[in-house]
Structures are given as structure tokens and as C-alpha cells.
Image 1 (cartoon, one colour):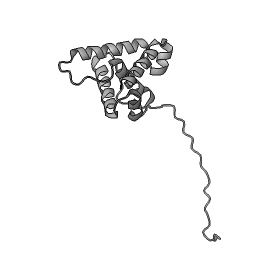
Image 2: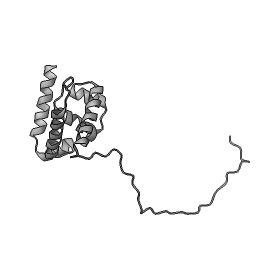
Image 3: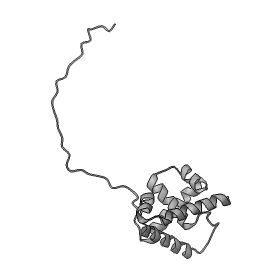
Image 4: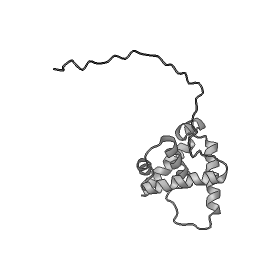
Length: 140
């Protein structure tokens, strides 16, 4: 368990040391946006009146887990294996991060994709002759 934690921490530090372009390429967001997300999560954690069992993952790791899910649409099984947690824990973390970021008022995450209406549809209708197959011919 300690080895997995150390490897996870090293991977996160390596990711956070990347320049903004590399970070955005991996996560889909700029480092400044990540910092805003982290700040919103920290504010939420500080405002909690009840603490339950502490998460194995740090807030940075929780945000990265959610970003991985949103960015890559990988299965919870694969994400949970990468982060060393159970699938149900990964699901709870994703929902917690989503809800916290939306409730912070700093971020808007669409619940449904907007429907696309294309006004420039070109219809082309052509009359084709219909050829009837004769039933009198026998198949060998």
C-alpha cells in the first residue's frame, strides 16, 4: 500500500511540474483552472461540519481522477486500478467532485449536451424507376 501511495504521489508531482501545454494536453484544462478547482474543493472541505472516514486520495488526486474520467471516458474499473481504489470509491469521488465544483458557483458543468439543430439541410429527392422481379422464374 505504501509503495502504491509513493508511486501515485510521484506521478502527480510529475504531472504538476509539466508546463501548461503538457498539463492541458493530459487533463483537458489549464493549470490555473486546476488551481481554481482545488481551491473550491479545499473550501468545501473546510466548511464541512462532519468529517467521516478520510479519503485515501488527496484532493489533487480526487480532481485528477474526475478529470481522467471526464477526459478519457475510461471505465471506472480501469481508473480505480490506476488510483489504487475500488470502483465504487472512484464513482463516489467523481460525483463528489462534480457536485462540489457545481455548488461552488465557479464552474458550470453541463448535465445534458445541447441538441443540435442544423438549419442548412439540403434535401435531394429523385424519382427512380422500380424494377419488379418476376415470380415465374424458378430458382435452381
